[in-house]
Length: 88
View 1 (tube, rainbow, N blue to C red):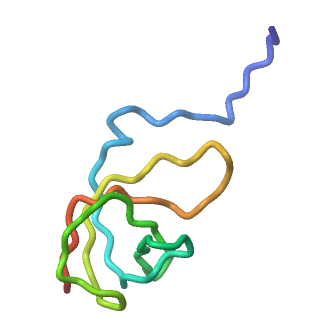
View 2 (tube, rainbow, N blue to C red):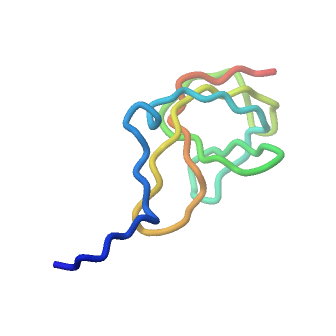
C-alpha cells in the first residue's frame, strides 16, 4: 500500500449531488439514438429518464432536474435526470 495520497480527487458531498438545477435551451436530437439533448449557449446536456411534455424538437424549453453523475469510463456529455420540461 502506498503512502502517497492523491489530493487531486475531491468527491462531492452527498447533498451537493442531489441539488435540483434549472437549464434553458433548445430541445435537440441526441448523438445517441432515441435520446434528447438540451442545447444551451454553453453546452449540450443529455436528458435522462421518461418525461411528459408538449415540447417538440427545436422548441425553447426550461428543464428542471438533477445532474447525473459522471461515468467512470471517461468524459461524455453531461446528463440531467429530468423532473419537468416546460415549453417557453
